Length: 482
Image (cartoon, rainbow, N blue to C red; front, side, top):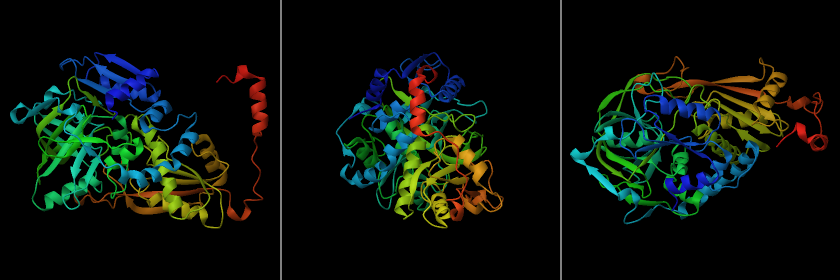
């Protein structure tokens, strides 16, 4: 079974790992990761971190290139964004369909069982925990982590990526947005007056990080989904404290519980929106009672950065979220869908772009409304833009040109009010009620298509034919280096 170290070996073979020696957890790791993400650079492996024992390492910028996406997701390598979206188009449906064939496989032991610290021996302060941004409210030990929980009603295992802030040697806070599966599961325990058992993997195959951040159907386990992606069941072992299934190949796992009503201040944290949104609020406490880890463990970290597009996980999420929304549109019976794109600038959530071939009057609005409120498009969205089939939705210049030339703001825009948002949103609706975890925002639908009634008489766009483009590129190769 592939683990993080196997993945690193594969990525080293293609020359996409850079070893960083001596970078500090005090802002340096965060700043290096953010600058590297802007350039779609190599995976960064931080070693010899000042103030921590030799051997404790942090890996960031895991899946920032098409080559690393291909290795991680077990898909063919391709050249363009559009090609990769096409590859992913039918895969989510296949993975969901096949997930039941690949339930997690319990094994007697794994690399994660190499070392254990329990009770008084637990010391979270020995684990490198960066302050990622200058105005963060603390050190975040969990940013690329997996939070593992069991639904007390269905016994299904949920695996999600949430943020974990270090408090002291045995305590963290665990922030999960309202409405997310992890939050709903924890509420079930707390409403019965029970502690919620939690396990947090800090280092793992980056495929797990990808899946931990996606809104997988609640009836399908994330472990099963990962198994379908890899074509083999994920190996797990029971946690020594909670009994929760944790990845056998994980680098480090924290185990403990969240007690009802036990809260501590958390944040602010520089989030994927590009702002310190949400401020400091009382958040659920996570009491750590045990640590399992390998020798010389590698923690996986992620750093949201300055505009929302340098956040390293946004690159791969753009492809997967786009493919999932496209699948949903087709399943809802919306015809003529050519492609979907959720741009990195905006965290793959704030804008959804749909390219379609218009079939009937009202077709554009049908597609836009479904995309704005479906499972993968509803949370903290802002704009849904629909363009014609001649527009490449992954090319923002093309999309903006369509918006500039095919939109009448007075008739081609609509607003949806009181949609699902989050305290991470820097522009919450005044109707939001934070005390009751009720967060709203508005959505704009933009019809950037040619008017349906006059689409055949709409002015013809200026462009060279593909044949002419190929001919001049071949004839003047020095102008078009590959």
